[in-house]
Amino acid sequence: MGLLAQIGRALRSAFAPSPRRPVGRAMASDAPLRFDFLVVGGGSGGLAGARRAAELGASAAVVESHRLGGTCVNVGCVPKKVMWNAAVHAEYLHDHSDYGFEGASGQFSWQLLKRKRDAYVSRLNQTYQNNLDKAKIQTIRGHATFVAGPEPTVEVGGKKYTAPHILVATGGRPSVLTDLEVPGANLGITSDGFFQLESLPKRSVIVGAGYIAVEMAGILSTLGSRTSIILRQGVGVELDEKGHIVVDEFQNTTRKGIYAVGDVCGKALLTPVAIAAGRKLAHRLFEGKPDSRLDYSCIPTVVFSHPPIGTVGYTEEEATKKWGKDNLKIYKTSFSPMYHALTTRKTQCIMKLVCAGAEEKVVGLHMQGVGCDEMLQGFAVAIKMGATKADFDRTVAIHPTSSEELVTLR
Image (cartoon, rainbow, N blue to C red; front, side):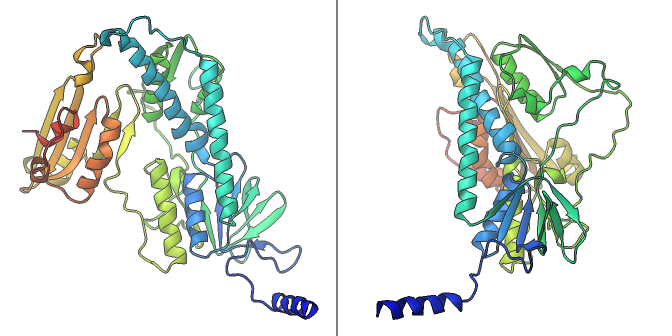
C-alpha cells in the first residue's frame, strides 16, 4: 500500500493543474518570463500595488536596482523623521531648566545617531524583502529598460520579462544645479547626500524652500549647525518640464498596459498617496473594479519643521478662486501653547479654517505649532466626510489642548 500510495501521489502531482498564482511563466528558454503584473520600482507605490495584486491572485514581480522601500524608507520620510525626533529632543533639552531640571545638558553624538538610524533602515529593507517573499512576489535585481514586444516588455540584466500590465513606480530624483547656473554648485550635495553626512556641519546653506529644504534646515539648525536658506525669487528664468510621466485619473499612461504611480507622476509627492494609488490600480486590474481610482482631493500633509506645519484642503487663495470671496468665511487664531507656559523659548501656534457656502462647509484647515503634525489626521477625516463649521462647534473640546481651539473658533 505504501508503494501504491506513492505512485498515486506522483500521478496526481504530474497531472495537477498549475497553481493560480505562479511566480512566472516562460514558454522557451529564450522567451521572456511572463507575469500578470510587473512593477518597475520597489518603493512605496510599487510595493503596495504588487502586494495587493498578489493578494487578488495575480502573479507579480518587482524590479529594483537599489534597496527596497524607495525614497521614503531609505532617504526620505523614515530617516528624516528619526533626525527630526533627535532635533525635538534637542529642543526639550533646551527647555529642561525651565521645568526644574538642573544639569541636564546632554551630549549629542551625530555618529551614534547615524549608526542607529542606518541600522533601523536596514531592518526595514529586510522586512520589505520578507514581505515580498511571503507573498510569492519575485524580486528582480537591476535596471529595467523597455524593449519591443507583442505586449509590454522590459529587459533587466540581459533577460526579458513581460506582462499585460506593467506599473512604473520609479520615484523622483533631486534637481541638481550645475556650476554654470550657480558657481560652486559641484561642492553641494542633494537631499540624498544629507543622510550620508558623517558629522554635523558647523555651517549649512540650503538652496530652496520646499518641504525637504525647510525640514532639513530645521534639523541642522536645531542640532547646532548655523543654517541659512536661499530662496529663488524673481530671477526671470523660464522653468522647463520636469520629465514626469503623464497619467490620467486612473494612472494610465499613453501606452496601453503601462501605468505609473508615485513621485514619477509629479503629483502629490507623498508616500501614502503612492501606496493608495498602487492599491487602487491593483483593484481595478485584478478585482474587476473598473472605477477604482484614487481621489486626489483633500489630501492631508505635514511639513516637519520646528514647529511642524499641517494642512489639508483648499488654501484661502484657492478657495477664493473657486467659490468667490463673498462665499467664504475664514476663522483663525494664534496663541502660545501651554507647553511654553514656563519656557523662556516661545513659539506661537496659528490655526485657520476655510469655510465655504451658506452652510459653512469646512474646505480647508491649516495650522503650525507644537503637536500639529499629530492632530491633523483626525480633522482630515472630518473634512473629507464634509464636516461643517457647525459640526466642529457641536464637538465638545478636550481641555487643556491646542486642538480644542479648532472646535471653539469664533
